[in-house]
Image (cartoon, rainbow, N blue to C red; front, top):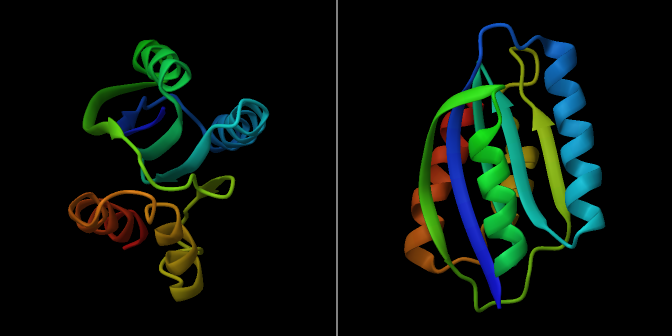
Length: 133
């Protein structure tokens, strides 16, 4: 069964831009190699991630994420089975002042939540939009 978990968290103060870029690269590689799809965004010390894949893999991954000392104040706001076809890949982005709101990127990000039911899509769309403001 496909399963999705989404959360937001706050990066630790000592986490520097290079470390965040490394997290993005490693997350992309790790998730793609395990058929985990979704999106990871970072902006102004905030992480947003939506992961989707086989239930046991996603639950194990989330436990590791929750124990990761590079962030804190983790708020999980979505955890549910996914009955639609999976996302087509995994995407990460490090949003900076220079790379703020971009209509094309927003549309691409929102594509990754289409697998969820309409109610969940509305909530996650707002979170993604806030990450880009």
